[in-house]
Length: 66
Length: 263
Image 1 (cartoon, one colour):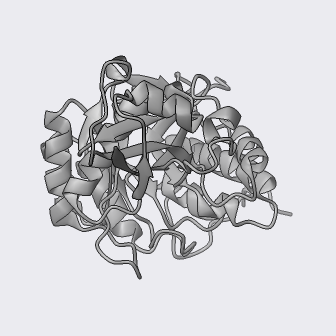
Image 2 (image 1 turned 180 degrees about the horizontal axis):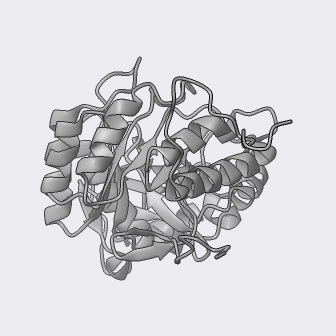
């Protein structure tokens, strides 16, 4: 299946969870927030939220700013 | 004589939280995260603003701000820098709340790329939505006293008028308006944006501001860590001068040495 991750298309194995995506991407789940099709995925639901074909995923974190 | 006049405990309180420092600093524009961390430490700030952006998924091992500026030590104040609509601002802060678990946020909705002046109509919309959603909103706004009162009325926990455009370093362009906002407000008023050097911060505090928020004035100084310390001292000095109550301005001289007993 294909998803759009932070604006870029990416092919993934079907049935991957948000937690699985973070692991595959090498990101620390404690330091990011995830949005799936404009809806926030709570950290508590990372394991149970499965990605679907065509999902638009945003993974954000804090950077320096004023 | 009492050497501790008006020496009661003085602290900055916002949204029910107490802080010793009245200087809030941004974390952007530094050379690297080490300089960011050192400058923040030198500033004595307890609240730091941060931005929310996409993770670089192609290079996840890049250093992260959180590894250098400990969110357990500093209160992260997520901002909405770069947002031009209420919708984008609300979306950004909901993500920030999920990333960090903080509901104290800095709302800024910009109206124009050249001036980075706030779009007040969108700011009001976003503030209402965020407050309804349980956020504590510190709001960046213009130096309009009527708008400041409106933002307080809808429940913002701090009003943060600009001194001058963001990143301009021009200092307080309209001290009369800042003073009017302070006199009318029952929530903290902080000058946010436009400070250029230490005296600007001191002036803001002497006007009676509860605090000052700045980023570029420190980050763009030749020696940011030195300027961070200068800002810490300026904010403290300005606050003390405000509490001390300055002398009246007079048109003519008034000798400091007594005239009696002149030879």
